[in-house]
Amino acid sequence: MPGKATKKNHLTLDHNGRITVENTVLHIEGMLTHQSIPVLKKTIRKHRKMLVSSIDLAKLKYIDSTGVVFIDWLRKKLFPGAEVRHADAKTQKALETFSSQGVKIPKPPREAGFLEAAGNILVQTWNAFRDILYLTSEIILWSFYGIFTSRGRRKGSVSQQMVLIGSNAVGIVGLLSIVLGLIIALQSAAQLRQFGAGVYIADLIAISMVREMGPMMTAIIIAGRSGSSFAAEISTMKVTEELDALRMMALNPIRYVVVPKFLAISVCMPLLVMLSIILGIFGGFIIGLTYLDLNLVTYFNQTINILEPKDLLIGLSKSVFFAWVIVIIGSYFGFRAEGGAEGVGKVTTSAVVASIFAVIVFDAIFSLIYMF
Amino acid sequence: MPEPIIQIQNLTTRFGDRIILDQINLDIYPREVTVILGESGCGKTTLLKSITGLVTPEKGEIFIFGRPFTESDEKKYKETLQRMGVLFQNGALLNSVTVKDNVAIPLEQHSHLDPELIEKSVAVKLRLVGLTHAMHLLPSELSGGMRKRAALARAIALDPEILFCDEPSAGLDPLSSAALDKLILTLKEQFNMTILVVTHELASIHRIADRIVFLDEGKILFTGTLEDAKSCGIKTVETFFETGSF
Image (cartoon, rainbow over all chains, first blue to last red):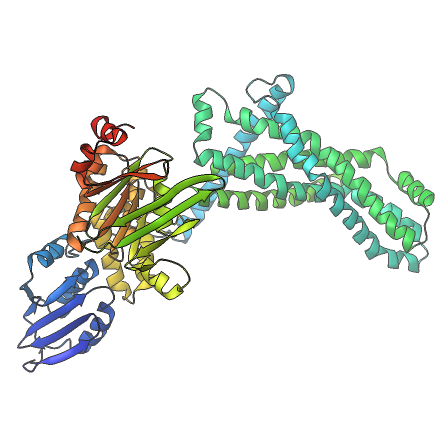
């Protein structure tokens, strides 16, 4: 049973609003806004058993939309059936305009169960695989045409891409390759010296740089540098409808946007890998010279003797394959972008992660193949 | 005439060597819809952004609610910001969260309301703009007009005293545009809101404007009522109201 509220109870008072209960009438005075409601609501909850038959708004100075929601809440949750009285015309209009009664809040979409989620992942993976195959075939087809004709792409776009992908990456690839050669040599020099086998540092550096570290390191740098830029550029073009505009001008977006990158990276990557190999060997030579007392002639004779043309061929063929992987993954994620800036950011991150992952996995596969 | 709610004194804004706003003096009066109009590139949006503090002017002072609107007193600055709402030209919704969460942000951050009332309040705002059904959608799943309406719901989440709207009708169909104008008028009448609108949609201006501010090359060419504007004797202004073009 609701208790009686015959006495005048000052429930709460703050600088904005005031609520009193007198003879089953709840009086709301002053300001009823989102600032005053939290205090009023907290206090009035303690007195929820009071009998209130009506809510009097005669002394209400101002009500905002949250105030209307609050009155609806009072009438629904605390004092069912209480009617609103003495609301002036403006308040009455506000009560009508901002009433939350009858507003149905839709339920958030149901989350998929385990099996449904697993099925979705399977379908998405299959779709992604299929899309990558389609994209790859289209890129290879148009790139093959692109070797013979520059139609369908902007003039000078291949050389422009070669500058962006190749020339601009020379510094970072070169510097990291020297450091890499230094690190590998430093790590092995002490052990080799113990056995009097210091001269074999040249063999170790040469084989590892030519067959593995040169192509892989360069590919990782290019994936981070250019792969991200491919994905960002294409995805931005997608969200700003530039790709649609190309289609409407009867231009194939792959031919116009991707082919120049594909051709440019196919040329630049082996060159960058060659640079990386040479500078990595040079980095190893610095340690051989300073720590293992090797001279220039001994070090480079040893290097040339251990290397076979097959090694260089393996390194360079891998580099071309990695280059294609980077372009295809960057383009795939770029074309998948949805939404605005958020979508661009997402696909760029995914493209870099996926390219680096793919480069390392394919490198492992190549290593296995070449072992036999 | 009531005290102005916004006072702009000698406002000069420059981007590099280009003067965008040149010695602007302007008073905005409470409970009125003031429309800033002018040709593209005349400085309308820059004026709006200068008033809201998003662009730092080179010279001049801005008073809002009778006190200088500067970041030097952080508490008062934030307090003033909470009494203002801005509807950006492209909505500027946060893309990573749903429409509901976008509208709830000001209520969650600047009020102590419990989640139940916040949810109801958000639902009411979204019903006002006709987007209750899109509550759980991401902004990227909305059309341009829906995004703008959701942005308006967020701008009025805290029932601001001043509402700034940057080209609210741009990109909307005539019906949506008229509905948005009706909502702007409801907000003005219901909550005594002062509304500053940047637009050059003639139909919209006729529906909502109490006062016109006509900008031309960074200077105010005319201020006054719509009726006065039509016969002010300034050729550019009169031509605009006659032909709808500059």
